Length: 139
Image 1 (cartoon, rainbow, N blue to C red):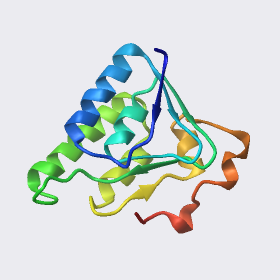
Image 2 (image 1 turned 180 degrees about the horizontal axis):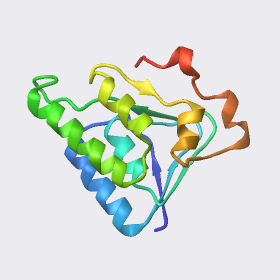
Image 3 (image 1 turned 180 degrees about the vertical axis):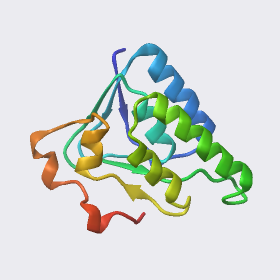
């Protein structure tokens, strides 16, 4: 296996981190296929990819960590821990900052410019299909 296609609006953060560790260990290519979303815990797995690719209509979304009880002190601490891991995978500080600043009950969809700074390879027609700064938040 050399490639992992991702499509998920999130889930358990610890499972996302476990998957991300495997992606990094195996040096997999991560892909967001046409029309698919990868957000929240899925973002960690995508970011661990040795090569990151996003196809037309796919979106990558971030927000802070939460627990069943909401955005607890422990959840905020986990967000900081995840920020450090993402930095080790060369995710730009600007993108990490968006994750930290976006509350768990919101989603921050990354722009074309942010994806490029992450080193994500984009389809040529991708530019017309991704959200621009005016349409950042929403579920």
